[in-house]
Length: 447
Image (cartoon, rainbow, N blue to C red; front, side, top):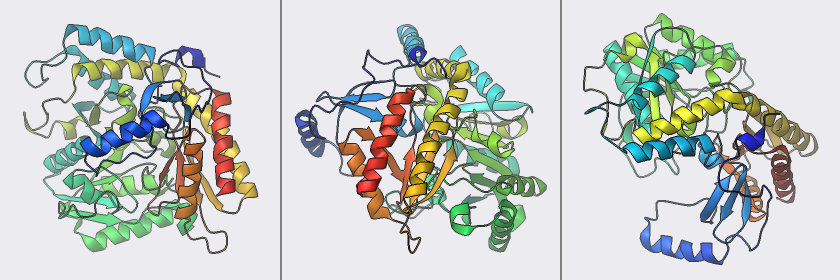
């Protein structure tokens, strides 16, 4: 096993679950009252606690409760909260300068992050990268690049997709609540195709790809399509892992028609799935790859990386932004990438083995656990009615709430709200991980 002591980070937190108060405790309850008076109602909190410190696999709240973290801030703190290398690199950069705007005066960190991304993303072709702030911003820029390179405008996304909360990315996103309802109209020239969802459709990857391609070709002329964008493993849509053969067939079809194939690896990237990027699991080399979340150890940074001839299609000044590639975030990203390459890819596989064994045992004894799926430290279970097979969103919500009350942070997802997803930091220890899974198992059983 990877030497977890080397990557725990954060303050000197005991790696044990401890509840000193009910959840939420009195101080968090006071903070919730302040939030209601200060923060817009549209900004929700899944687990009603306020954090004092975090590191390893523990999040400690302001009431002194130590919670097991199986969420990583939605796959962001993959290297662990306050990873020592990230802290040191960020602090050193903070002491030199915090901002100049790379599009005004350059700095080495931006270039070095782009060099690293060009090196570690799939494919040995010539690449270029550009840096931004959020995943949604990177998705929008990937679409801009594809349109500039092809001279076309149409974009194809998939059922159950999630690509962000900006206007264009809401159009690309499939789920209405809470992401889209009441916020339209949305950007046009977006079409949707069926996703390979083996648990629900029972199709091979080739069959699912054929159906998707036929649907696309009925909706729009091929010479109008600039790009196809897809998550290799869907995130918010339910950790849907497509059947083998689906993604390669789509990528081959796109290439044969001059369509840019974009892999949204915002949630799957940076060792999360037991490969540096999930595309590798499926044997595909995207034309463009979009990254964010785990890239910089918790600091805001995102990127588009891809074939040089595509990335260079936008005119000078067409890509950028005031904060894009902030120097402190770039320093954090370089430290994070170094940590990922120093054993954390392998650690994600170890975590995946532990999670899969526990979830498969649940499925063997509880018919409400309809499916277990994922790769590495990106795993999920789908809860269903054991008789009808219909999604059990209410059970999912109860189980997640029970886990939260017992001091374990888990997240839900899925178009139908019936999937529990697990995204532990790669710095979590085996014993703590197993304890968290036991708590989750008990919560589902009691649900």
